[in-house]
Image (tube, one colour):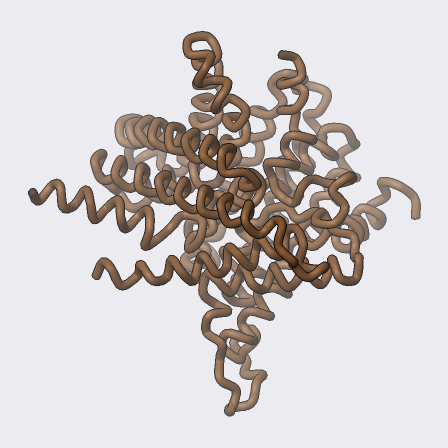
Length: 229
Length: 194
């Protein structure tokens, strides 16, 4: 597939470099809001909207933003779109807004967004960047929905509120509580290791150490600064 | 006595009962990324305490006197910029004035800007309309909770490193399982404060 075409970007974001399953970025919202499939969809789509718009704007402005102050500039762009999304959600999807609560403003510090701004949108033309954001956002939404559905199924026997398991199924309620999030993700990464699926956890050379801090050191300019000293 | 008991209860509740990492999932990235050794975990934890305490004091004042009611929608933008600027200036000041402390904490400081616990605490206490003292108790308690969690995690990781772990669970999966078990253990604190 040709590089940097809209379709290639979508494929890259959803499958090849899926932010959750492959890059292991943005773990905080992934674990925190996936208590049900609906929450996963809500969080995923709001992140997707922010990612698309911020990638687009950052890409348009990439020739005007001076190299040295690019991080603060990116943060302002991202934070503005997060505020827009937050206000829109507060007005139109009140129930999702209340259940996601604090995690909506925290989209600002989601490493996927700054990571894409730094590694893609700051270097590529607007259209490709927009679709990169869309692809990554959809990949994130997909991952959050799958994890949310899994936890909801095990924890309550339902998916999207519809009963799936037979009546005799005893819900494993720990799966929708905090520890369950860790266990689901542990099993997921273990499976990836087992089948040697590409993931940040078993290919540390290409991606980060499986955490934002490792990723930031490599991608987001902090490394350069510490090298100067 | 009354003040002391609120202080004590507040810190216990923020640090243990609603532990920032294990029950609210804030600051997971450094928790998973910088917990390989107890010494670095301790450094990270201390730096987080310093930054959270400072930043919530400043964001409280700004929120209370400048944003106050009319400009509340600017919270997210203003807070993240304050935190980023604060972290940067703390780094510069430490480097000039206290080089020994800078050597110990300096490397962790840039990583703290995107630690969602810092922004999370600031926004959470602003949304809940906490008073200044409540904000401080809440933020210090949260930061101490982060320190406890990350140091415990580093201690456990040092122990399990040389153990016989199933091949597929090596690396991140076993860390996540450990975190899950720690979260279960921290559920035990839920009953301590009613």
